[in-house]
Image (tube, rainbow, N blue to C red):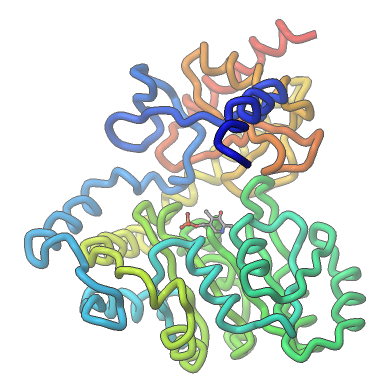
Length: 389
Ligand SMILES: *Cc1c(COP(=O)(O)O)cnc(C)c1O
Protein backbone atom coordinates (compact mmCIF):
# COMPACT_ATOMS: atom_id res chain seq x y z
CA UNK A 1 0.00 0.00 0.00
CA UNK A 2 1.43 3.33 -1.03
CA UNK A 3 0.35 6.65 0.51
CA UNK A 4 -1.61 7.80 -2.55
CA UNK A 5 -3.57 4.53 -2.67
CA UNK A 6 -5.08 4.87 0.79
CA UNK A 7 -8.02 7.04 -0.18
CA UNK A 8 -9.38 4.69 -2.85
CA UNK A 9 -8.68 1.62 -0.70
CA UNK A 10 -10.74 3.16 2.09
CA UNK A 11 -13.52 3.97 -0.39
CA UNK A 12 -13.47 0.31 -1.44
CA UNK A 13 -14.01 -0.72 2.18
CA UNK A 14 -17.00 1.63 2.31
CA UNK A 15 -18.50 0.16 -0.85
CA UNK A 16 -18.15 -3.37 0.51
CA UNK A 17 -19.76 -2.47 3.84
CA UNK A 18 -16.47 -3.30 5.53
CA UNK A 19 -15.31 0.11 6.72
CA UNK A 20 -14.82 0.11 10.49
CA UNK A 21 -15.34 3.18 12.62
CA UNK A 22 -14.72 3.91 16.24
CA UNK A 23 -17.46 5.29 18.42
CA UNK A 24 -16.63 7.79 21.11
CA UNK A 25 -17.45 6.75 24.67
CA UNK A 26 -17.89 9.17 27.56
CA UNK A 27 -18.18 8.10 31.17
CA UNK A 28 -17.89 4.53 32.40
CA UNK A 29 -18.45 1.24 30.62
CA UNK A 30 -21.71 -0.42 31.60
CA UNK A 31 -25.18 -1.51 30.52
CA UNK A 32 -25.91 2.16 29.76
CA UNK A 33 -23.24 4.15 28.02
CA UNK A 34 -22.78 7.59 26.52
CA UNK A 35 -21.59 7.08 22.98
CA UNK A 36 -21.20 9.77 20.34
CA UNK A 37 -22.94 12.17 22.69
CA UNK A 38 -26.07 10.04 23.24
CA UNK A 39 -27.24 7.57 25.87
CA UNK A 40 -27.55 3.94 24.75
CA UNK A 41 -28.48 0.61 26.18
CA UNK A 42 -25.38 -1.39 25.27
CA UNK A 43 -24.97 -5.07 24.46
CA UNK A 44 -21.56 -4.52 22.99
CA UNK A 45 -18.88 -4.87 25.64
CA UNK A 46 -17.03 -7.90 27.01
CA UNK A 47 -17.72 -6.66 30.52
CA UNK A 48 -19.68 -9.85 31.21
CA UNK A 49 -19.80 -9.52 34.98
CA UNK A 50 -20.42 -5.77 35.03
CA UNK A 51 -17.13 -5.16 36.84
CA UNK A 52 -15.45 -2.65 34.49
CA UNK A 53 -16.98 0.29 36.33
CA UNK A 54 -17.18 -1.32 39.78
CA UNK A 55 -16.34 1.17 42.56
CA UNK A 56 -14.38 -1.36 44.67
CA UNK A 57 -12.03 -1.97 41.75
CA UNK A 58 -11.62 1.73 41.01
CA UNK A 59 -10.99 2.28 44.71
CA UNK A 60 -8.29 -0.42 44.80
CA UNK A 61 -6.62 1.16 41.78
CA UNK A 62 -6.63 4.65 43.22
CA UNK A 63 -5.43 3.47 46.61
CA UNK A 64 -2.52 1.71 44.91
CA UNK A 65 -1.82 4.82 42.83
CA UNK A 66 -1.58 6.81 46.03
CA UNK A 67 0.86 4.31 47.51
CA UNK A 68 3.05 3.33 44.58
CA UNK A 69 2.33 5.90 41.88
CA UNK A 70 1.29 5.11 38.35
CA UNK A 71 4.13 4.14 36.04
CA UNK A 72 5.86 0.77 36.37
CA UNK A 73 8.99 2.51 35.12
CA UNK A 74 10.67 -0.52 33.56
CA UNK A 75 10.19 -3.97 32.13
CA UNK A 76 9.65 -6.91 34.52
CA UNK A 77 13.23 -8.11 34.06
CA UNK A 78 14.65 -4.73 35.01
CA UNK A 79 12.98 -3.07 37.99
CA UNK A 80 9.36 -3.11 36.84
CA UNK A 81 8.29 -6.34 38.58
CA UNK A 82 6.37 -5.00 41.58
CA UNK A 83 5.25 -6.95 44.62
CA UNK A 84 1.65 -6.18 43.55
CA UNK A 85 2.30 -8.02 40.25
CA UNK A 86 3.99 -10.89 42.03
CA UNK A 87 1.24 -11.47 44.57
CA UNK A 88 -1.41 -11.27 41.88
CA UNK A 89 0.39 -13.94 39.84
CA UNK A 90 0.29 -16.26 42.83
CA UNK A 91 -3.39 -15.55 43.46
CA UNK A 92 -4.29 -16.14 39.80
CA UNK A 93 -2.39 -19.44 39.62
CA UNK A 94 -4.18 -20.66 42.75
CA UNK A 95 -7.55 -19.48 41.42
CA UNK A 96 -7.29 -21.52 38.22
CA UNK A 97 -5.55 -24.44 39.94
CA UNK A 98 -2.24 -24.29 38.11
CA UNK A 99 1.27 -24.31 39.58
CA UNK A 100 2.39 -20.87 38.39
CA UNK A 101 1.27 -17.82 36.43
CA UNK A 102 2.78 -14.89 34.59
CA UNK A 103 1.19 -11.51 33.86
CA UNK A 104 1.33 -9.99 30.38
CA UNK A 105 0.25 -6.50 29.34
CA UNK A 106 -2.44 -7.80 26.97
CA UNK A 107 -3.86 -11.11 25.82
CA UNK A 108 -2.64 -10.38 22.32
CA UNK A 109 0.92 -10.04 23.58
CA UNK A 110 0.63 -13.15 25.74
CA UNK A 111 -0.39 -15.22 22.73
CA UNK A 112 2.50 -13.87 20.69
CA UNK A 113 4.95 -14.39 23.54
CA UNK A 114 3.98 -17.92 24.51
CA UNK A 115 3.75 -19.49 21.08
CA UNK A 116 6.86 -17.81 19.79
CA UNK A 117 8.91 -18.93 22.78
CA UNK A 118 7.90 -22.61 22.48
CA UNK A 119 8.02 -23.30 18.80
CA UNK A 120 10.10 -22.36 15.78
CA UNK A 121 10.01 -23.00 12.04
CA UNK A 122 10.55 -26.73 12.58
CA UNK A 123 7.37 -27.03 14.63
CA UNK A 124 3.69 -27.23 13.76
CA UNK A 125 0.79 -25.30 15.29
CA UNK A 126 -2.72 -26.75 15.02
CA UNK A 127 -5.55 -24.24 15.34
CA UNK A 128 -9.32 -24.27 15.22
CA UNK A 129 -10.39 -22.33 12.14
CA UNK A 130 -12.40 -19.89 14.27
CA UNK A 131 -9.59 -19.04 16.66
CA UNK A 132 -9.03 -15.44 17.65
CA UNK A 133 -6.79 -13.43 15.33
CA UNK A 134 -4.08 -13.14 17.98
CA UNK A 135 -3.57 -16.92 18.01
CA UNK A 136 -3.24 -16.92 14.24
CA UNK A 137 -0.78 -14.03 14.36
CA UNK A 138 1.19 -15.80 17.09
CA UNK A 139 1.61 -18.90 14.94
CA UNK A 140 2.69 -16.78 11.95
CA UNK A 141 5.21 -14.90 14.07
CA UNK A 142 6.69 -18.16 15.37
CA UNK A 143 7.29 -19.23 11.75
CA UNK A 144 6.00 -22.70 12.61
CA UNK A 145 3.78 -24.38 10.04
CA UNK A 146 0.19 -23.36 10.77
CA UNK A 147 -2.36 -26.12 10.24
CA UNK A 148 -6.01 -25.20 10.76
CA UNK A 149 -8.78 -27.67 11.44
CA UNK A 150 -12.50 -27.16 10.86
CA UNK A 151 -14.33 -25.67 13.83
CA UNK A 152 -14.47 -28.16 16.76
CA UNK A 153 -13.53 -31.05 14.46
CA UNK A 154 -11.47 -33.42 16.62
CA UNK A 155 -11.47 -36.18 13.99
CA UNK A 156 -9.71 -33.96 11.43
CA UNK A 157 -7.35 -32.67 14.09
CA UNK A 158 -6.43 -36.23 14.98
CA UNK A 159 -5.67 -37.05 11.33
CA UNK A 160 -3.50 -33.94 11.09
CA UNK A 161 -1.62 -34.80 14.28
CA UNK A 162 -1.11 -38.39 13.17
CA UNK A 163 0.35 -37.19 9.86
CA UNK A 164 2.71 -34.71 11.50
CA UNK A 165 6.41 -35.43 11.68
CA UNK A 166 7.23 -32.23 13.57
CA UNK A 167 9.09 -32.74 16.82
CA UNK A 168 7.28 -29.92 18.56
CA UNK A 169 3.52 -29.71 18.12
CA UNK A 170 1.18 -27.21 19.72
CA UNK A 171 -2.61 -27.23 19.62
CA UNK A 172 -4.15 -23.82 20.27
CA UNK A 173 -7.81 -23.01 20.70
CA UNK A 174 -10.22 -20.46 22.06
CA UNK A 175 -12.19 -22.11 24.87
CA UNK A 176 -15.22 -19.87 24.29
CA UNK A 177 -15.19 -18.73 20.67
CA UNK A 178 -15.23 -14.98 20.68
CA UNK A 179 -17.65 -14.37 17.81
CA UNK A 180 -19.76 -17.52 18.23
CA UNK A 181 -20.00 -18.09 21.97
CA UNK A 182 -19.70 -21.87 21.69
CA UNK A 183 -17.21 -24.02 23.62
CA UNK A 184 -14.14 -25.99 22.60
CA UNK A 185 -14.12 -29.70 23.53
CA UNK A 186 -11.34 -29.24 26.09
CA UNK A 187 -11.25 -32.81 27.45
CA UNK A 188 -11.09 -34.26 23.92
CA UNK A 189 -8.34 -31.84 22.95
CA UNK A 190 -6.34 -32.76 26.03
CA UNK A 191 -6.67 -36.46 25.20
CA UNK A 192 -5.32 -35.78 21.69
CA UNK A 193 -2.50 -33.65 23.07
CA UNK A 194 -1.53 -36.55 25.35
CA UNK A 195 -1.76 -39.12 22.61
CA UNK A 196 0.34 -37.13 20.13
CA UNK A 197 2.67 -35.49 22.66
CA UNK A 198 1.61 -31.94 21.84
CA UNK A 199 1.25 -28.79 23.91
CA UNK A 200 -2.35 -27.75 24.50
CA UNK A 201 -2.79 -23.98 24.64
CA UNK A 202 -6.20 -22.80 25.86
CA UNK A 203 -7.18 -19.18 25.31
CA UNK A 204 -9.89 -18.59 27.91
CA UNK A 205 -10.37 -14.87 27.21
CA UNK A 206 -14.16 -15.26 27.31
CA UNK A 207 -14.37 -18.05 29.88
CA UNK A 208 -12.36 -16.68 32.80
CA UNK A 209 -14.73 -15.22 35.39
CA UNK A 210 -17.73 -16.54 33.46
CA UNK A 211 -17.54 -20.34 33.33
CA UNK A 212 -18.10 -22.44 36.44
CA UNK A 213 -19.84 -21.60 39.66
CA UNK A 214 -16.96 -19.52 40.96
CA UNK A 215 -15.85 -18.23 37.59
CA UNK A 216 -12.63 -20.23 37.52
CA UNK A 217 -12.96 -20.60 33.77
CA UNK A 218 -12.52 -23.44 31.30
CA UNK A 219 -10.26 -25.50 33.56
CA UNK A 220 -12.86 -25.52 36.31
CA UNK A 221 -14.41 -28.74 35.04
CA UNK A 222 -11.17 -30.64 34.46
CA UNK A 223 -10.01 -32.99 37.18
CA UNK A 224 -6.79 -31.85 38.82
CA UNK A 225 -4.96 -34.95 37.61
CA UNK A 226 -5.25 -33.65 34.06
CA UNK A 227 -3.21 -30.53 34.87
CA UNK A 228 -0.37 -32.04 32.97
CA UNK A 229 2.71 -29.92 32.22
CA UNK A 230 1.64 -29.88 28.56
CA UNK A 231 -1.36 -27.70 29.46
CA UNK A 232 -1.00 -23.95 29.01
CA UNK A 233 -3.81 -21.68 30.13
CA UNK A 234 -4.32 -18.07 29.10
CA UNK A 235 -6.93 -15.67 30.41
CA UNK A 236 -7.35 -12.00 29.72
CA UNK A 237 -8.14 -9.51 32.46
CA UNK A 238 -9.86 -6.82 30.39
CA UNK A 239 -13.07 -8.75 29.75
CA UNK A 240 -15.02 -10.37 32.62
CA UNK A 241 -12.38 -9.23 35.13
CA UNK A 242 -13.10 -5.66 34.07
CA UNK A 243 -9.52 -4.36 34.22
CA UNK A 244 -6.71 -4.91 31.69
CA UNK A 245 -3.95 -7.33 30.85
CA UNK A 246 -3.69 -11.11 30.77
CA UNK A 247 -2.00 -14.01 32.48
CA UNK A 248 -0.59 -17.33 31.38
CA UNK A 249 -0.72 -20.26 33.80
CA UNK A 250 1.18 -23.53 33.55
CA UNK A 251 4.00 -25.51 35.07
CA UNK A 252 6.72 -23.68 37.01
CA UNK A 253 9.20 -24.62 34.27
CA UNK A 254 6.97 -23.16 31.57
CA UNK A 255 6.64 -19.87 33.44
CA UNK A 256 10.39 -19.75 34.01
CA UNK A 257 10.95 -20.34 30.30
CA UNK A 258 8.55 -17.53 29.37
CA UNK A 259 10.33 -15.13 31.72
CA UNK A 260 13.52 -15.94 29.84
CA UNK A 261 12.28 -16.25 26.28
CA UNK A 262 8.91 -14.61 25.62
CA UNK A 263 9.85 -11.48 23.70
CA UNK A 264 6.41 -9.89 24.24
CA UNK A 265 7.07 -10.24 27.98
CA UNK A 266 10.69 -9.17 28.03
CA UNK A 267 10.78 -6.20 25.68
CA UNK A 268 7.95 -4.16 27.07
CA UNK A 269 7.31 -2.03 30.14
CA UNK A 270 5.44 -3.76 32.94
CA UNK A 271 1.82 -2.73 33.38
CA UNK A 272 1.24 -0.14 36.09
CA UNK A 273 1.17 -2.00 39.43
CA UNK A 274 -2.10 -0.23 40.27
CA UNK A 275 -3.73 -2.45 37.63
CA UNK A 276 -2.53 -5.52 39.52
CA UNK A 277 -4.16 -4.11 42.64
CA UNK A 278 -7.34 -3.58 40.63
CA UNK A 279 -7.31 -7.17 39.34
CA UNK A 280 -6.80 -8.45 42.89
CA UNK A 281 -9.95 -6.59 43.95
CA UNK A 282 -11.76 -7.93 40.90
CA UNK A 283 -10.73 -11.49 41.72
CA UNK A 284 -12.50 -11.21 45.08
CA UNK A 285 -15.70 -10.10 43.37
CA UNK A 286 -15.41 -12.80 40.70
CA UNK A 287 -15.00 -15.54 43.28
CA UNK A 288 -17.58 -14.40 45.79
CA UNK A 289 -20.36 -12.68 43.87
CA UNK A 290 -21.84 -15.79 42.29
CA UNK A 291 -25.07 -13.85 41.68
CA UNK A 292 -23.36 -12.23 38.69
CA UNK A 293 -23.07 -15.56 36.87
CA UNK A 294 -26.56 -16.58 37.97
CA UNK A 295 -27.93 -13.32 36.55
CA UNK A 296 -26.15 -14.02 33.27
CA UNK A 297 -27.78 -17.45 33.11
CA UNK A 298 -31.22 -15.89 33.59
CA UNK A 299 -30.61 -13.26 30.92
CA UNK A 300 -29.43 -15.88 28.43
CA UNK A 301 -32.59 -17.95 28.99
CA UNK A 302 -34.77 -14.86 28.63
CA UNK A 303 -33.11 -13.79 25.39
CA UNK A 304 -33.37 -17.26 23.85
CA UNK A 305 -37.06 -17.50 24.70
CA UNK A 306 -37.78 -14.04 23.30
CA UNK A 307 -36.22 -14.40 19.84
CA UNK A 308 -38.78 -16.95 18.68
CA UNK A 309 -40.57 -15.63 15.61
CA UNK A 310 -37.78 -13.30 14.48
CA UNK A 311 -36.43 -13.71 10.94
CA UNK A 312 -32.93 -14.05 12.43
CA UNK A 313 -31.89 -16.82 14.81
CA UNK A 314 -29.44 -16.98 17.68
CA UNK A 315 -26.42 -19.20 17.12
CA UNK A 316 -25.97 -22.19 19.44
CA UNK A 317 -24.37 -20.73 22.55
CA UNK A 318 -24.86 -20.97 26.31
CA UNK A 319 -22.40 -18.22 27.13
CA UNK A 320 -23.02 -14.46 27.39
CA UNK A 321 -21.92 -14.19 23.73
CA UNK A 322 -25.23 -14.61 21.89
CA UNK A 323 -24.76 -13.91 18.19
CA UNK A 324 -27.83 -13.17 16.10
CA UNK A 325 -27.02 -14.53 12.65
CA UNK A 326 -28.02 -12.18 9.83
CA UNK A 327 -25.86 -13.42 6.94
CA UNK A 328 -25.32 -10.51 4.58
CA UNK A 329 -23.01 -7.80 5.91
CA UNK A 330 -25.12 -4.93 4.55
CA UNK A 331 -28.22 -6.40 6.21
CA UNK A 332 -26.30 -6.81 9.48
CA UNK A 333 -25.20 -3.19 9.31
CA UNK A 334 -28.76 -2.05 8.58
CA UNK A 335 -30.11 -4.01 11.54
CA UNK A 336 -27.46 -2.59 13.85
CA UNK A 337 -28.34 0.88 12.57
CA UNK A 338 -32.06 0.27 13.20
CA UNK A 339 -31.26 -0.70 16.78
CA UNK A 340 -28.99 2.31 17.17
CA UNK A 341 -31.86 4.58 16.14
CA UNK A 342 -33.89 2.92 18.90
CA UNK A 343 -31.15 3.64 21.43
CA UNK A 344 -29.56 0.18 21.50
CA UNK A 345 -25.93 -0.49 20.71
CA UNK A 346 -24.84 -3.86 19.30
CA UNK A 347 -21.94 -4.27 16.89
CA UNK A 348 -22.42 -5.82 13.46
CA UNK A 349 -19.58 -8.32 13.07
CA UNK A 350 -18.53 -8.66 9.46
CA UNK A 351 -15.87 -10.41 7.42
CA UNK A 352 -12.94 -10.85 7.83
CA UNK A 353 -13.69 -11.21 11.55
CA UNK A 354 -16.29 -13.85 10.62
CA UNK A 355 -16.64 -15.89 7.40
CA UNK A 356 -18.30 -14.44 4.28
CA UNK A 357 -22.07 -14.69 4.48
CA UNK A 358 -22.01 -15.12 8.26
CA UNK A 359 -22.32 -11.49 9.35
CA UNK A 360 -24.06 -11.19 12.67
CA UNK A 361 -24.99 -8.97 15.56
CA UNK A 362 -22.85 -9.99 18.48
CA UNK A 363 -25.18 -9.56 21.43
CA UNK A 364 -23.16 -9.69 24.57
CA UNK A 365 -24.92 -9.95 27.88
CA UNK A 366 -23.65 -8.65 31.18
CA UNK A 367 -24.57 -9.10 34.81
CA UNK A 368 -25.05 -5.32 34.70
CA UNK A 369 -28.14 -5.84 32.53
CA UNK A 370 -31.58 -6.10 34.11
CA UNK A 371 -34.21 -8.47 32.68
CA UNK A 372 -36.00 -5.33 31.43
CA UNK A 373 -32.98 -4.49 29.30
CA UNK A 374 -33.25 -7.81 27.48
CA UNK A 375 -36.97 -7.17 27.03
CA UNK A 376 -36.22 -3.75 25.53
CA UNK A 377 -33.81 -5.37 23.07
CA UNK A 378 -36.37 -8.01 22.16
CA UNK A 379 -39.13 -5.48 21.48
CA UNK A 380 -36.79 -3.43 19.30
CA UNK A 381 -35.84 -6.55 17.32
CA UNK A 382 -39.47 -7.53 16.85
CA UNK A 383 -40.34 -4.00 15.73
CA UNK A 384 -37.50 -4.06 13.21
CA UNK A 385 -38.54 -7.51 12.00
CA UNK A 386 -41.98 -6.11 11.16
CA UNK A 387 -40.41 -3.54 8.85
CA UNK A 388 -38.12 -6.20 7.34
CA UNK A 389 -39.31 -8.05 4.23
C1 LIG B 1 -9.77 -10.34 23.41
C2 LIG B 1 -9.05 -11.61 23.08
C3 LIG B 1 -7.66 -11.69 23.10
C4 LIG B 1 -6.80 -10.48 23.30
O1 LIG B 1 -6.82 -10.06 24.62
P1 LIG B 1 -6.47 -8.54 24.95
O2 LIG B 1 -6.12 -8.54 26.38
O3 LIG B 1 -7.70 -7.77 24.64
O4 LIG B 1 -5.32 -8.17 24.06
C5 LIG B 1 -7.08 -12.91 22.90
N1 LIG B 1 -7.82 -14.01 22.64
C6 LIG B 1 -9.16 -13.97 22.58
C7 LIG B 1 -9.93 -15.21 22.30
C8 LIG B 1 -9.82 -12.76 22.78
O5 LIG B 1 -11.14 -12.70 22.68
